[in-house]
Amino acid sequence: MKSGTVAVIGKANAGKSTLVNVLVGEKVAIVSPKPQTTRNRILGVLTRENYQIAFADTPGLYRQRNALTALMMKTAETTAKEVDAILYVHDGHAGLREDDIALMLRYFRSGTPMIVAYTKIDIMPKEKIPAEIKALYDAGMTADVYPVSARKGQNIARLEEAIAALLPEGEPLFPENVVSDRSEKFMVAELMREKILLKYEKEIPHGVAVVVNTFERHENGAYQIDLDIVCEKKNHKAILIGKQGAALKEVASFARKDMEKFLGGKVFLTVYVKVREDWRDKGSLMKEFGYAPEE
Image 1 (cartoon, rainbow, N blue to C red):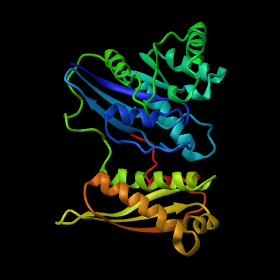
Image 2: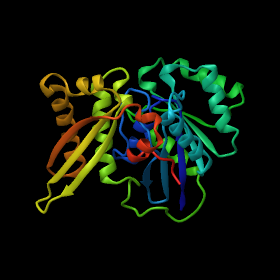
Image 3: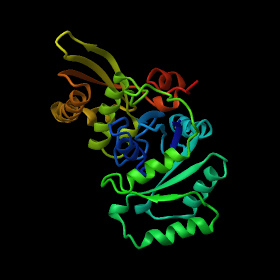
Image 4: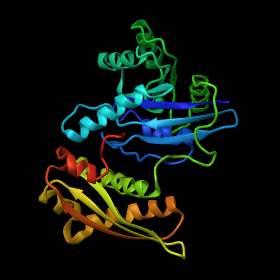
């Protein structure tokens, strides 16, 4: 059978995590319309009768602003060098600029087999697609390009088969029932962060880390989860909590519902908000909060 790893690379907000979730068939990565939603490399595993694809969903390519974003960019670059193939995800709705072409060419010329998913075709003028694909080929980017819509499921099956065709022959890398390399505890923290990204505006969500202190499953199947939302400034803490705790209560309620759906059991959730100034530029705190370079 075909078996191998695929780095999912592209700019922030290109739709990488949404596409991986659709391909895998389960939610293995959080999704929001804001940059820096994905901070860690997250593996989503798709197993079929004739192939297994391990998608490495990476942080979106983004201008470095602090030590955390520098680490995120390093994660994406390192992953692209360690895989059997690259799935470059381009936001078709955002248009095609010179820097988009330059980025694709850089990965295409790396020597790793590559395929391009041209996403969000359901919300863009269809007549733009042929001209932009031609512009890519004219620039020397001759990897196959698949226009797709993850939200509508358009061309997803064809893209999946094309990705599998790039992989080498080999034994499965993971058992058939595995869909991700991340723990339930990790996903619980990510679900909390997803709801923060969706609710709060401006810089606040990007300066937030979520630390799970207690993750226990009781005999009756219910879970006790205690976690900290860590922010960088005192005024951010006040905004996160809201008037009489209303904002925090709302975002925690949304997160708890998704946690119960993901875990398949009742969740008793306790949330605290703490301040750790400029933690995104402090290596020791980044490591403590789960953002350390992968070995």
